[in-house]
Image (cartoon, protein in one colour):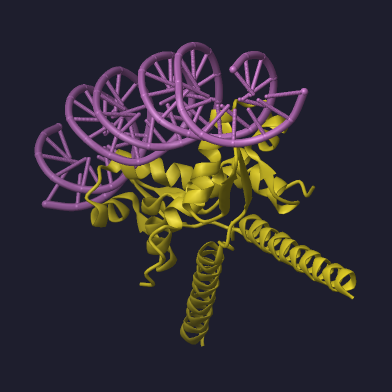
Length: 116
Length: 116
DNA sequence: TCAATACTAAACCCAATGGTTCAGTATTCA
DNA sequence: TGAATACTGAACCATTGGGTTTAGTATTGA
């Protein structure tokens, strides 16, 4: 079987949280400080930081500190492994359908053969 | 912003678990009973059942009971919403790069203008 | 220098998750 | 009928996850 990048788990988990997806959406519109990220959620700074750290951990966010403010921006990860997994699943799903169809057609033929 | 199907959260969470992804991989090769699914994981039946229920909840698995055995097979969900979200993210990511590039080019032009 | 700002570290809280065991129930088969 | 099979429901348990508060530390600006 295909051996996916071992952090697919972490990436999927990171992205499964709606708050984190909103953070990503915000950062797609441009960089932001932790405070700026926190504001629309009325969530504590430490709360936001936890999410940011998780996103940073899987490369979806990059941060660096300028003086006392930490700037957050989108990181280099583009979810390639997620996309690959989804497409792989889809392919297998379709192959399963093909096999099922073939099986049914086969049965039908046999039934017809028996009836002759 | 795009309003994703409200169960994107649940689908992503379902699929973030490696055991559940393995179950899906197994079912892609054909239907199986709960016991058959449990075997390769040396996990208790109730344990497997919990995973199956979760996958069933998001449409990735379908089950029905024949006598005392419950047959599990892949369900109709093909992760369309996940794929859509990933592609959306990728688009925004690229747009961000474009903007950054434009910004940098602009700055460069201005600097050149000043230097003249 | 001193107050205000912007984060951060640590400790804690509670609910959800991923697993278990144990005791049924329903089916099958001899 | 009676034993074995295949699940299922309930209760439980440990860990993690998402959040908080509280008390710092480092930077900035007046």
